[in-house]
Image (cartoon, rainbow, N blue to C red; front, top):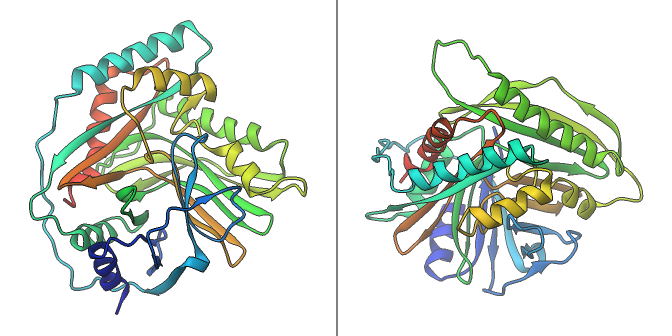
Length: 346
């Protein structure tokens, strides 16, 4: 029985599982759980697969290695062919989203808030839901992303194709990144980044550098580069270093999550604004997920470009970073562009 068969079997039996492929790899891995216990990580010292919410004060769900069947196998999708579906833009929440963005811009101009990431949830009805088909489409479409399907009958079903690494760690050495700024990829057109995106990116990089200053050494910050994720381009700056002996994995996770790329700056002020104004629960959107202490390595990714599926309704989560130079109408259009990542595979 291959890993795709196990997805189908576990889902039908209502047993938890997490299956994923790391960026640019052709190996798919999975934690297939033996029962439907709901376990949590206490300090990120366990081994397994972790699924953490946006709110760092809430518990991260753990699929423990010792309670699961851990599988890795070569990914073969050569025979998979599909047509991209098109959905009309859902403008129902446009005015409310623009109003929140305008409120955020005004708040930034009149307070110490520098950036806040405003998000929204859009629902799409699915006909003839086929979990395996949707997941395989994601794998085929987004080879540069961490592509995952996660299920627990007591929590829900989530799929995603995220371009953003939260943390790669082996022994004391770590790698992370700042990822911000978005524009639609246009073939044959020169990529030009405006000051708003460049500033937004620099804010994230500076935050990471400041947060790691007291717990890490040998920090190396690469030059900012443009990367492609699906139909979008982003600015990325790679950061690496060595964790101090008096720090641990929990310390660096708490230092980084949630980053300004998904929350804002200052972090606490941005979070307060979001809780008061977004008017919905992000749940696991902009949380993180991935391998925890597997063969002395951890590979954690920010849960972006994701959706939750319940009763043949897909809830698609999308957002964008707001600074003093943001334009509310353009910010709305950016969320529409980001929603295409998930819509095209439904």
